[in-house]
Image 1 (tube, rainbow, N blue to C red):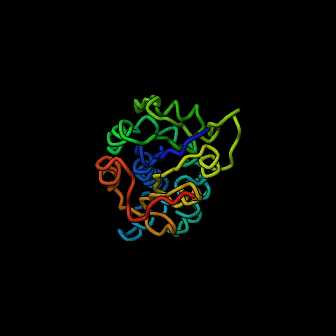
Image 2: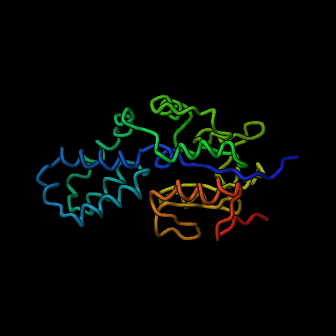
Image 3: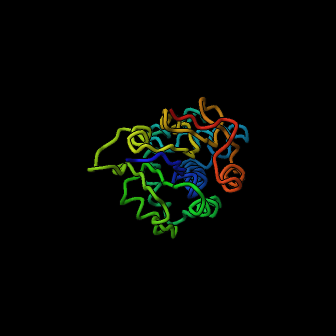
Length: 232
C-alpha cells in the first residue's frame, strides 16, 4: 500500500536553470537585430513592461509571445519576423544555460525528510540534453516529470501533475515562476510561485526561494508556512 509522502517538485526552466533570465536577454538581442532604431526609441518604463511580458509568457509558442511583445511596443509589422527568430531561440541559447544558485539548496533537501522531483514541459530527451550542458545529475531526483513521462504503474498516462499526485498518493509542493504554472493547481498540489498576481497560491519574491527553502524545510525538517498544505 502506498504511503503519503511530501514531494517537493521544482520547475526545471526558470527555477533550477537560468532559462528565463537568459531568454529575456536573448529576446532583446533579437529585437535589436531586427530594428536598432525601434529598440532605441523604447523608454525604460516600456522596457520593463516588455520584460514582464517575456517572463510571464516565455513558455508560450513563439508566435503568441511575439504578438504580445509587438503589441506592447507598437511594432505589429515585426511580429512574423520576431516569431521566426524566437522559434529557434531555445536551442541556440542552450550552451549558455547554467544552474541557478537555488540548486545547492535543493541538493541539501535530498538529505532531509522530503523527496524531490523535477518538472519540465520538455520531453525526456531534451531534458537529458540540457542536463548534460549544465552538468546536472538527474539521479539526484526521486521523480523526473517530463512532457512524455509522468512515472506510474504500468506506464499509465496522466493528464496533469495533480492527477498524477493523487494517483501516487503524494503530497506535492510545486515551486514555479510563471502565470502558466497556476494550471498545475489541484487538491494534492500546493503552489509556491515567484510571481505576483496568481490566486490560490503562496507568493514569494523573486530571489527569495533559497531563504524560503531554508526557513520552511531545512531548519525544522517539516513544511509549516502560514498557508499549510491541506490534503484530505
